Image (tube, rainbow, N blue to C red; front, side, top):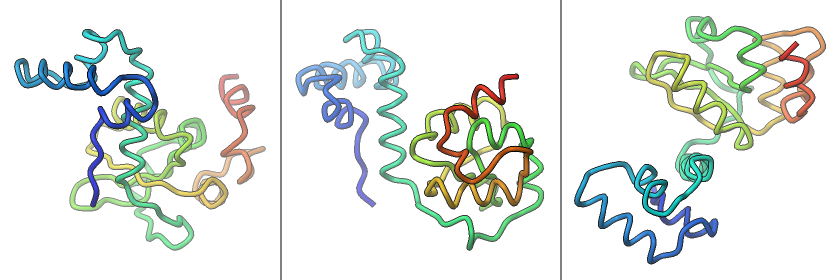
Length: 163
């Protein structure tokens, strides 16, 4: 597996220059603080840019799956409600060696990561699925009136779920 560093992603996206990354790395060696935190403090990087770079980094290393052929664990399904599954576009699949495997799309990875970190309360790793197969699996496992497989990519879903 090829490992890509957060600084490389931030350079690719034009957020930091190679010189800034070197300054951040030097400070990181001194303090041991996370790269993103130092980037925010030293270079004024917006936390949202750090989060997006982290999601890009994660997307490059995580597996891609087809929900239609995965084995599901009912205990995993019980960890999120229908509303949460659709709101955050997450599909709990099963436990692998004590970690919950959940699928989402690349577009929704940032939100899914925040949800998994702040709500689930268990070790979680995310895998990526294409939007339509994820939507089909959500319809089967978390049916919600008015939701269709195409709703995974529909921004109007947020407005509906907020009401």
